[in-house]
Image (cartoon, rainbow, N blue to C red; front, top):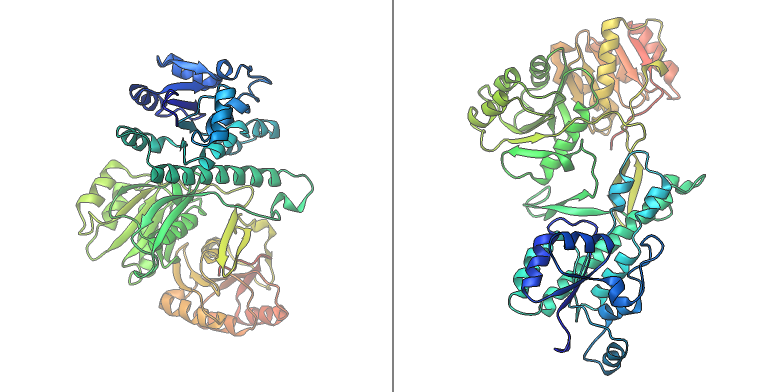
Length: 525
């Protein structure tokens, strides 16, 4: 940049967090500022001298501010290369003053579309045009211009400028961040516009898909120590999510912790009564509901106390003192707890009483409400991505059908409804044994449904007498029913739909077992 020009920064931001101190710091370094409508007024209110962009360009803002920065004197000041003869001549001829810095962030498009009942016209007005143009221009010309797009960069930029102009390496870093910001912004606009196209297959699954995620944490490692890992979150994650959970105590979260906490949160949120869930390797090894949280925890932990060692535990009610006292009993080791909140006495107990007090991760997160429309689920495969609607919409018991000669009694019906919820969250092939709204044994992830039945019955032991069975998919043969009868099972809930349904129904009638067909499968691979 020629020494004949003043140090000048173009400032045009939607999010003004931290801007006051940053600009005043630049002013102390001799910068003068050109700015647009809202930003200009804000800086003037802070006592900063600002040149209005219309004064610089000689052209007014028009169309309610839609057109203000799309002008040759603006983009010439950003894209100009003063050490090239042709550019220097244009700068001189058209009285362009090159910008040393461009400070710009964009209209809050994602925040706008995240609001309930936002209209298409409201969303359209938050699609920034001039901002991305200026950012991309400055990022392209990073050899001459520093592009500042985030308040997180303000202090580093000020510190760097204390020693003179920004280094080429720092300008390159800022440029990369700027292009990432505009790419994410464009992806958000594209995804939204695809979603509002009427009567089109793109309404749910568009021809192309982009996902905007921001790195939250660099993790110590992945599933195993030899794998590196990081945690990325959505720009606007819903409140009831692991991405929004607040950590109140304990060691940093690991890759596997995040997976288990997510599973724990989803299961607990599926119950209306006070519930406790014990998770190991994303599967529930204990789960129960009751009239009180402490009773629910007692039942859940008793489901499989051996597997519960080193587990993740979730609750769908604020954790109270009575439940905390149970958690702190000797010979229990808990990796993490997630709950909507913690009573002060309960929190104090958990961080002072047990041996694992300093290490236990205490997470605060509201429970998920039952969604009206299922969100999307993404799973990476080699060379691609599978996308589906999440299996999170609740089943309606009114759609269930009793197919045996004996109907379940009221106790069995409660247990069947409970077992069906738990079963949805167990890896398939999934078999769940439950009684008195308590998980007694689960067979998860087996290649044979019969093997899952054996495991569930083994875990339940003698407690299986009078229990119910939930199966995430149909029984392909009667052998599963025969094994359930040997364990003392009195009722079964399953989707139905096998070519051998009649054979399975006959087996239930022979054993006096009541059976319900739900008409809906819940595989979880």
